[in-house]
Figure 1 (cartoon, one colour):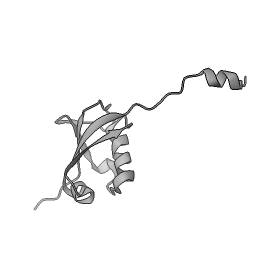
Figure 2 (cartoon, rainbow, N blue to C red):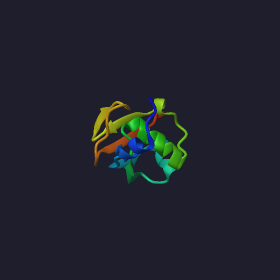
Figure 3 (spheres, helix red, strand yellow):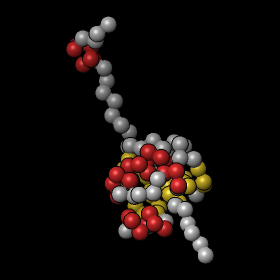
Length: 97
């Protein structure tokens, strides 16, 4: 059944929630970003979505599958939910010798 114009006006418009996230960069990500940390507002719900946003903003070339993530100093999953004021660290693969 089609929705009338009047019905569509009565539905609430959902705005995306934004959260403030502290991000710390290491190794190649720090080099590409040109800084070691930043705080930003994001509507990303997970670290994976946050990294995708950062790829668009800063041109990061590493695929998300090659990264580890820590939230508030604990290793975490890329699918864990983010909360306001979380501290997120994306950890790229490192080579040693």
